View 1: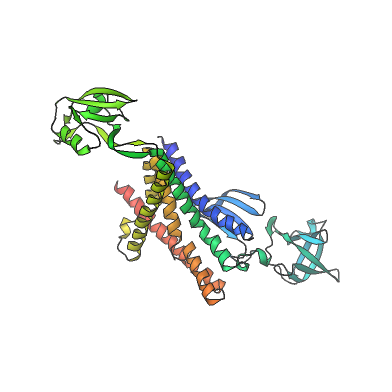
View 2: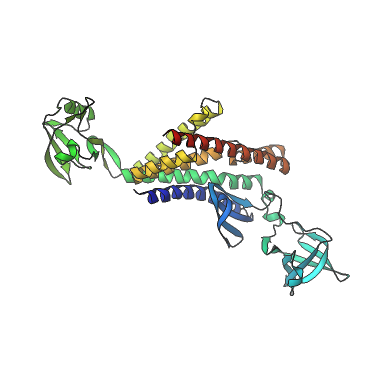
Amino acid sequence: MNVLQLILLNVLLFFVLVTVHEWGHFYFARRAGILTREFAIGFGPKVLSFVKGETRYTLRLLPIGGFVRMAGEDPELVQINPGQRIALAIQDDKVTHIYLNDLDSRRDALQGVVEDIDLEHKLFVRVDVDGVLHKFAVHPQAMMVSKDKETQIAPWDRQFGSKTVGQRALAIFAGPLMNFILAIILFISVAFMVGTPLPDRIRIQSTVDSSAAQKAGLMAGDVIIEVNGEKIAGDSKKLTGLIQDSANKPMSWVVERDQQLLTKQVTPVLTADNAIRVGVSLGPDTRPATISEAFQFGWKNMVLYSTLILDGFGKLATLQVDMDELGGPVQIVQFTSEQAAAGWPQYVNWMALMSLYLGLFNLLPVPALDGSRLVFLGLEALRGKPIDPNRESMVHFVGFAMLMLLMIAVTYNDILELIKG
């Protein structure tokens, strides 16, 4: 597999995992009626951006995550205050556009000074036009235009904070949930790709170039039936023992290939380090997995890997892991490339594992992660009133800064490992 293919498969891994996660937030926010201002993959400067419906979709430069910006989660970027001069575009007796600058160029708009305005609850604006007060209703999807940048207003019923605790919690939890769903789908797919092992049949997975196996004509996919007249079935220990007793001695191997039995003469080689090699990697023969077997395989891997990941989080939280042992983006790229080079089953299994990891990691009660936001919603449900938004925002900001510092630290470790070779 060439370098370009490996790069594309690394990009695909990041894009799929982050997109699925953010789509979960986006979909359930939309279902709850929340205005979603932006759906972003990556952070930092915009590389690609377009608007569809009410949402701006962006691809950003730094591949370290993504976000869905919901109305009301942060203070609105554009504020209009009494005494400010604005221009209004009116259609069917409702304001559709509110212009904040370059007013002289808005020839088809009505200009005036704001006397009173409410763009959240009552949706109206009262302006003084040449000494005469005029009151206009504002369309719930009206646009505010500042320096040619349009921002849709967010009435209270379209804001994140207006929804029930349950609706908000679902919109937050849906990100990790989509990662879990993707993980089990991919684990099930791996089961269909590799099949169900047959314990009584051993198959050659690969052969080493210029090895005794290749010289004898053995090939990947051959099923070993018998060696020197002895049935092998699924007994790999017996096969290994026969090889170890036959250094530089011809052996008679009977293999099954394309439903035909073939006899090959194989001579194990005694290497310089006194190891006796044939030059094959072995694995169980397989048959196509049934739907039931594939689902069992997928669920078993979900439980197994979840246990391992959570155990790792526990060791990290209790400082049982040395910082030097932590890997970052560079190591992830390296391992992803190795799995991709090993074949599609390994790559898909790795993508499933990473999706599961991303889902579980985001549920940790760490500020700036989804788990922390769910904790705040839980506290709100217990108290009967929300936490001060400014305090919550500060907690998430500090948490995000700490995560970025951790990212820098593990990336530094990655670079040191590369330098050390």
